[in-house]
Amino acid sequence: MTLITDQTSAKSRQLGSGFMPEIGTAAASEAIADLNESYWGCMRWASTATPRFSSVDEVHSHRAPQATTLSHLTNRKAQGGSEALLEELAVDRGLGWTDVARLCGVSISAVRKWRSGGALAPERLRSLSKLAAFLDLLEKAGPIGDPVGWLMMPLVEQHTVTAAEIYRFGLDEDILEHAQGRLSVEELLDRWSSSWRKDTHADWMVVERPDGERVIARRS
Figure 1 (spheres, rainbow, N blue to C red):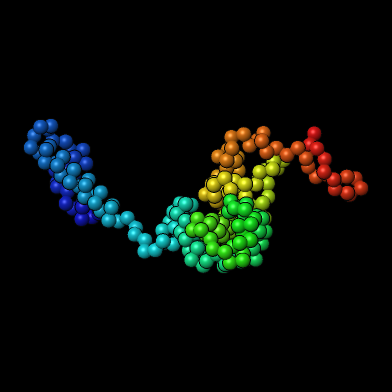
Figure 2: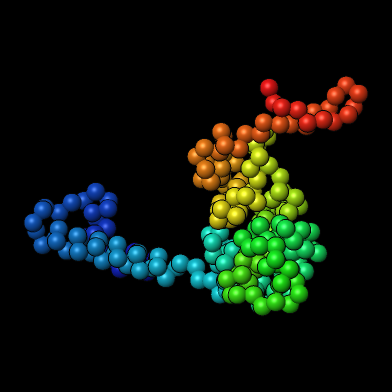
């Protein structure tokens, strides 16, 4: 920046200090030209001063585009293959096969075929990889201590909708925003459905009687 300042003529510096040559004179034209040159010099300097990142992970540490991060991790997970992904989801994460099928948008029979070594279409492999990547991000970037348990839990008291249902709807990035505290639960649910307050209200609840027994009762 010092070099740019030094290149500014005496006449343009006089403009900055309150001295104004008569409009239309050669001195005024020269000073204005010098100021323009100084301005574009500053812009060129600013562009070269923009930080450059040497890796994808370094880029992710400087910004928070959920789609880019999730897509990058999904591609990396897919490299391990379907057998490793199924083991990660079922054994490491504790997902039931029914849950895997629902979250990936396939039938239970399809998951059975995968478990027995059946080939996966590329889009199905991506669905498995994306689910595994999504759970990782919930745990690490959320942070959510038990991502599977949190995913299956109703998001709002007295309502039945879960984050799993919203994931199936395709709002995985929005769920991650909410988990990181950048999107309220009401905003998340509004993106999912404008009528969620009415459509997902639970008519039944578990209550504890005076004798300690827990029973299901209709909400008043």
